[in-house]
Length: 334
Image (cartoon, rainbow, N blue to C red; front, side, top):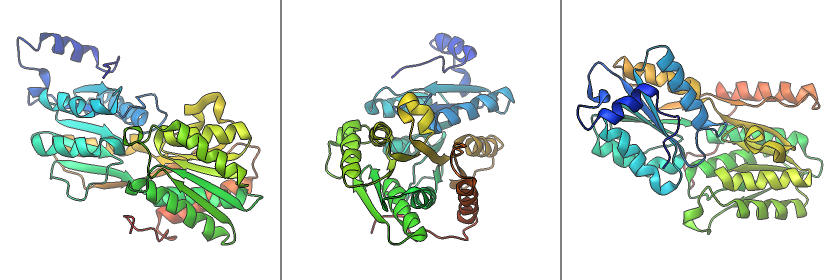
């Protein structure tokens, strides 16, 4: 793991002295909140970056006394990163990403005195000190699908997705399928799931994502949707190289991919900063939040696209958030 500029100076000073006195976060008057990122790190242009910005805002407003950040260099670091904050008396521990679900649940069970927020971590049987913060993946995928249906000229669109064994990934991509069909049932939607790949490469299989995008493009797909960390980014980059429209999820993929993102039309992802601040304020005040299904957004389309596309997206976003449009995608894969 790597400990960045992440920790505030005051925390560093306390840490150095912790061998001789009680760490500051064990003091009742100091509310401490720590963030553990997934392997994409704090500059992911998504939930990690937004969550860290939320904690910085809360510290500046004196809602939180001390904040800490651990960027996980490897998935094998997740448990010890979370455990570090728990062992040092942090009141609130935020773990960002579905890949940390099992580790967050384990830490919450073993550390009942700390409160946990698991971002993008639906938990069927969460203990009372663990609050999942999720975003409606099916709705975000559906919104992407309605856009893809309006962009395609070949009437073939594709989805490149991490394993359907992860419910969040399945909802993203089946939501995309439903959104396309909502606009035009005659469009051919080809969804490819990474079902049998190396388990160590879950969310990290860039080459698989690249290969699937190549396959879809050869089949005539002129819009590609991708979900699933670095795996998805491989598909988005391949689409960009081929000049095929791409729609991203989970973070601002155009910003994350830089020069290799020319054809990323938009990305749809959850507003983690707003939701983390809201939940932390409640927790700090002693009011436990409910498990949240947070708000989400999309990156504005370039000016080169017709204004009607933006109007249609805004209307659909409103209808989805208000539940005027239902995706009909179940919470779990049947």
